[in-house]
Length: 147
Image 1 (cartoon, helix red, strand yellow):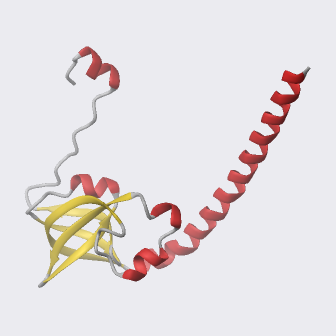
Image 2 (cartoon, one colour; image 1 turned 60 degrees about the horizontal axis):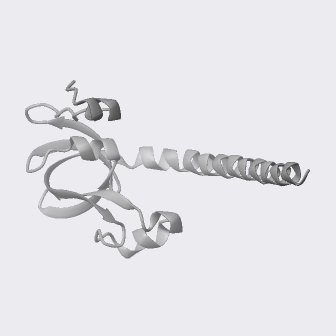
């Protein structure tokens, strides 16, 4: 009898949490949809030489102060892909998309699509865009298979 009451309370809490996450997710989707046109309007293709790339916290990356102020509190401690690149005569610190970060070659000139300080897409690299090595599955690593 007591166990069923405890299970019902836990079930009720889980249902409330799921409903709250659903509405919070919808709100975040609406915000992103509202910001997407401005993001698309600010896109431009740039030729740059990648000097360095690493994953750093936003506070350690050397971005302007306004970037860290506008970052949500839950993102401040996460590590983001940061690229230091020479764009024209300037050396800039840029944030990158995860897929683009893995494909960007070091010490090579490449054309990328930039929106503000965010690298959104890799257009071309002299010699072709390098393919990212596919991660081996857990079973492949355990059994020592190569694919």
